[in-house]
Image 1 (cartoon, helix red, strand yellow):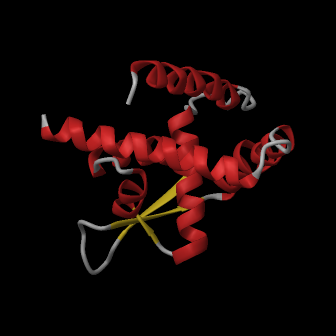
Image 2 (cartoon, one colour; image 1 turned 180 degrees about the vertical axis):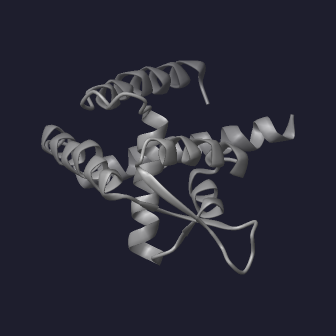
Length: 148
C-alpha cells in the first residue's frame, strides 16, 4: 500500500472519530469503554440469553482480566449485575440492570438512530465496505503486533 493511501485512510479515521465524540455526555464515572461493554452485553444477551465475561472478551478481542476490570467498574456503578456460577466458581455471568438498560437505550440505541439519520446519504454498501476495511485493518495490525 502506498504511504499516501495510508495517510488518506488515517485522516478518514480521525474524521470518523468525531462521530463518536458527538455522543451525549456520559454519567459520572462512565467511560466510552464502559458503554462499549454495555453494548456487547446487550447484544450477547439478545443472541444467547446468558453472557459470560469470557464471551465479552471474545467479542471485543480483549483479555479476560481487562474485561473483568471493566465489568467490575460497571457493577460498582449499578449498571451490570454479576453472578458466580454454582457449577464452576471460575465462571461469572453478567446482565444489564435496569440502569444498564436505560444507558443502553440512551447512549447506544437512541444515539445510533441519530447517527443513522446523519449518515442517511451514504449507501449501505459504502458503509459495509468502510466497516470491513477498518475491521480488517485492525485485525491485520493486531496479528502483526502479536508476531513482533
